[in-house]
Image 1 (cartoon, one colour):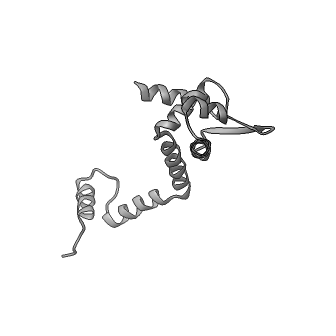
Image 2 (tube, rainbow, N blue to C red; image 1 turned 45 degrees about the vertical axis):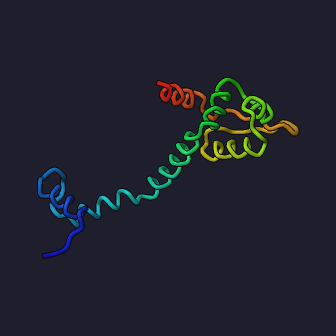
Image 3 (cartoon, helix red, strand yellow; image 1 turned 60 degrees about the horizontal axis):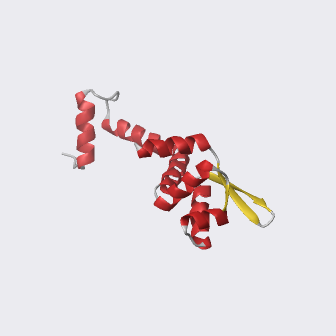
Length: 129
């Protein structure tokens, strides 16, 4: 008898129950692994991970709330939230990397705004319910 892991045993039971469209456990296992390893899906998952990481911090949530009201300079965010400049820059860079905010420079000033205001407002509202 072949030694199977608990996962393989569970998959075998699923296949034998007829609940999946496959006759062979090994083929089904290979199909599942192929689905999970598709490059586009991996890139999208990585981007979603950055996005949710960015939303998972209270300070960044507060920054987003302020930016949902209007475009703001870093000095405005620092003043409103009582942050240091390095701390604000750290949070803003995470939000930029997640494609949530964008900046524009005007002389020596850097202004931030939401990339997709409606998307962020919808998420903030949903999280508040």
